[in-house]
Length: 126
Picture 1 (tube, rainbow, N blue to C red):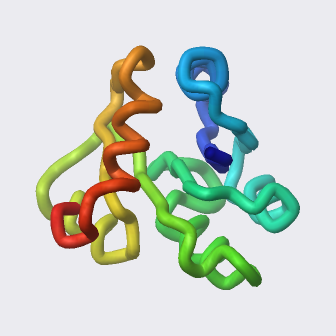
Picture 2: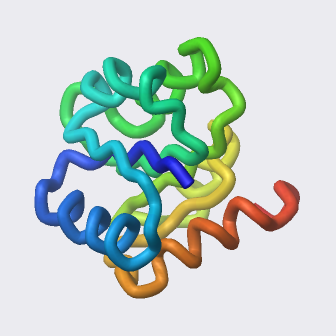
């Protein structure tokens, strides 16, 4: 699986890379900003987009909206990651088109398995 990961925190990017590449065997395109994701996403052709919610300049919702406008990315499933999760916010992310919202801190040992589960379940369960 090819995952586009957008996260401004370098430490979280590093842990996510270990979790998804070394432990789960996925291909990862790691981006430190929404702008970087926009410049790399089309060439990478992700199967899943994993987006931080709170980022400078372009937040996760803005990044997802911009990515969805790129050719070939409109239907790519997206998962948001956030440390600040309330029910109303979670619903906002799901309404924006995310298939799931993952709370930080996450367990690096099970992250890959969680993402696989999100992709395999029916959309109504999100």
